[in-house]
Length: 229
Image 1: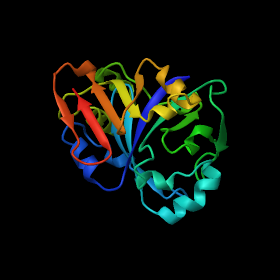
Image 2: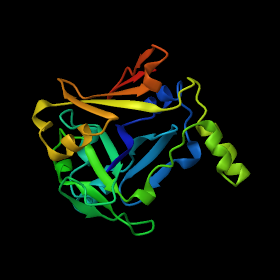
Image 3: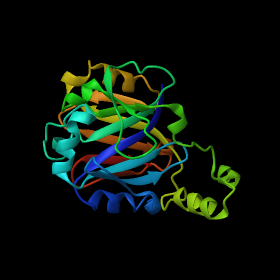
């Protein structure tokens, strides 16, 4: 099983504007998740991406919860619910119980949604096959392998950031102590790129390039996100 990307659940555009000071938004990739009541906004790095998950239609999201395998619409409003999530990829059955979820649109392949997603204090976690994994790159020069010149230019632009950031080297997640024993949380904590610890307030700390610039940026709203760069 491999770590793929992170999710941050947001209620407005403020988080996106804040992140855009440091990272270039991949505007053409913005996606409406038909039938889910949500949409995604994306920031790409060499090794992963950050998805801001917006709740656009709460009624639609609630109707979809039976298929999704857990309540998720309340994660945007309930202060006791974790506003963060992770996507992973795996060749074999994931080391956590769950249900298969097939979106209403797309190629019909499903996601494996963790059963622990029903625990509001746990982060959302889902797994997909490796062929849906993010295309990692070791440097900006790898973009030259993209044959289509227009797409090559677009990807290069999305990987060139105002802060000079290149990789997301570590994700530190703070959750309530009572969810640390869940199989999904333990599976996340086993990744070299992820550390999960307990605390009084949900927090996601994103360490860019090992924090080589020695700068710390904290989002002033909720959810609490900290960039270390």
